[in-house]
Image (cartoon, rainbow, N blue to C red; front, side, top):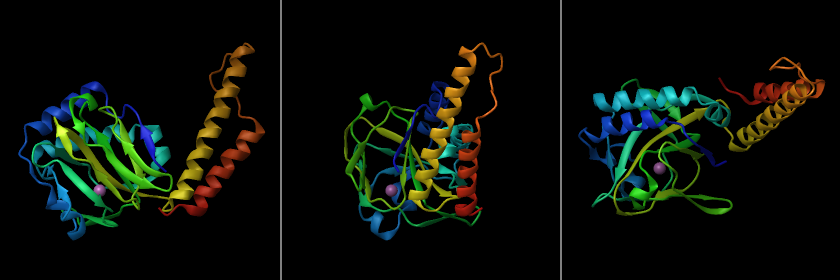
Length: 241
Ligand code: NI
């Protein structure tokens, strides 16, 4: 499942993150690449132990935790601490690759299985040419270039690349998620079910208000209660926590 999550960062947070990381010292992007991806990777990356990286990571982590669409779509068990990269000038692309299945966080030796890959865009798309994230899925290639502050999540199993940036600079945050639900198809089903239940509850609320109800949370119908039960029982069956 490819999912766009708009406005993960507020304009203020986006400005803060950009200011923090743009003044830091960047390194060659191959510091986190495996041998296959290292051969096709030509970008720059922020070393994760820099104070600016830590502060920017904190802003992103707080924003993710408060975003219901992120939580619903990812059902995160463990999130690899967000990293930052930039593409431009001579370091401007990342060819086709699949992300390593397991990332080990150097500072904590903690392992994260990369069920989901995420890119949070940090540059105005009008400020650079190229730089699309191209993800191969069963419907063909998806070319992704979102507004600054928007996030895309896609299955970690996908072959993907970043097209060469031919003008300006593409700045982004990227990270991986180990989900409580390992299989993409199961996460997709839970996500669809969650959206449908939420919509049914909104419709019930609209009807209650139309009928002069005072409460902003009318009692759920028996059907919604059963569907919510199904959601949780599927999650109970599939979740690994
Ligand atoms: Ni990748």
